[in-house]
Length: 147
Image (cartoon, rainbow, N blue to C red; front, side, top):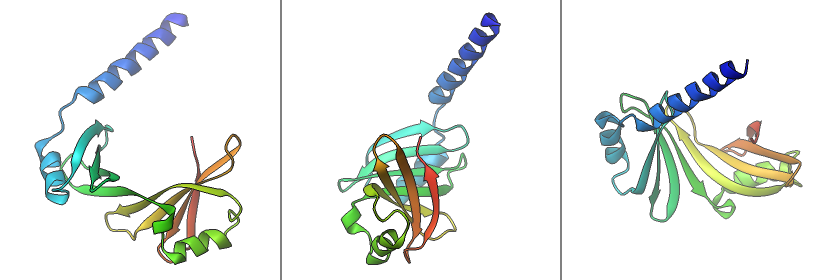
């Protein structure tokens, strides 16, 4: 049983290493350069089913996901809580999470979908943490546990 477990762990390590070694296709990097010509400090990650670029534009941290064919899928842009629209702030105030402490905020744009705003909130830093997803009108669309 111990040998089987060690073989499983070794297999996972080999898969992880191979996933990081695979070259990013030129279709992906070309599509990225076209969509984000002013990007700086670009770092790529191979997520096996898509490629993720982490980068900076004008001091703002962002990530963008592209398919293997170079099709843009999603962009997450870090913004401050103060930069949220009044609708989204009001939505948080009216939600059952009004007394939770907000943290990081991201504007999420996905291909073929409306913009969402993800707000990290916590009730107690050791106990209750969630990501809340609001639409631009301030409606809470979903919530997710953090890892």
